[in-house]
Length: 407
Image 1 (spheres, one colour):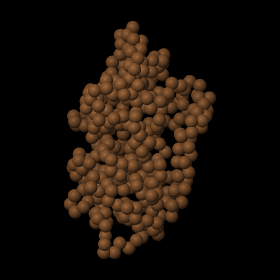
Image 2 (tube, rainbow, N blue to C red):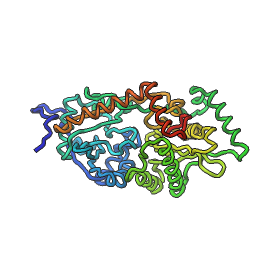
Image 3 (cartoon, rainbow, N blue to C red):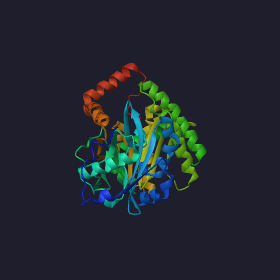
């Protein structure tokens, strides 16, 4: 019989730390704690990926299709909810991993923690807490906290400062917004961007110009998302990369987000923006906004003769301007360092990956996961290796895009 033998074996004795006084419950869906969760998110949330709306749609659409067992972990101090770990248990071979729900489509993966509790634990206390959570969930070999921000609102999170936490495969770039878009533009190579924007406007003038279009209804958002899926699938084929949106339940997850967005008029779990000209869409961006932060989910640029004007750059320019006008404070385009992102994003949100074993299977799996991470980080951080990988892809797919508007 397997037990939580690798972490959490210490005898706590009488002098239990506050973290050990927390009570733990585990739920298969968000409904039993949704009101409390929403209240905690309203006062302590930092990104849309922690919201009950985002997680609820993933649970309804993607988790069953992907064979993920939900484990929404609620931690209370007395009657007060102070932490939510939105986890799911999935298998990689014989290993059962507890991970943040959302997989690679959640660019930021962290528990929702009340500010007073973010720095409460040293590594030993964190391990004891994880052992208790593992016992409550049952059937867990390994906790995998990937894409975990080192800080939340400037406060180090106890999981991220664990000595076993290592750099994540990549970080997330962000752009600090301000109400005056012109001032923001001036601080980000404004002359070059303004010149490029004027050129784009002039290039499109003969066909009637262009417009930035934001979906104003569920039907319009669904149509724009279907257009995105079509173009995205074609792009993946050209690049010779597996289509992450074709995996079971993923497209249905985004459709569920769209449905929830228009069931609740104040919900901004997803919005879809597009550049339209000549009677069709040429660049499409899906993003969600919460707590003053707009986070990009997906981007597609139509592959046709108009790609020469960089419609993706035009879209980002106008989306950033609109976000400034709405009073949004922070903007990100997800993980990765593609050129179209680097030209705007001016800060790096450092992410880590914390792997903590529960059983011997979990301990054995850590080496393989860390080796894969190290290889990916080396390729991403070595310009020569990254260029070689890009050339190999283009050799296999001569029609692959070359202008840096990768998605």
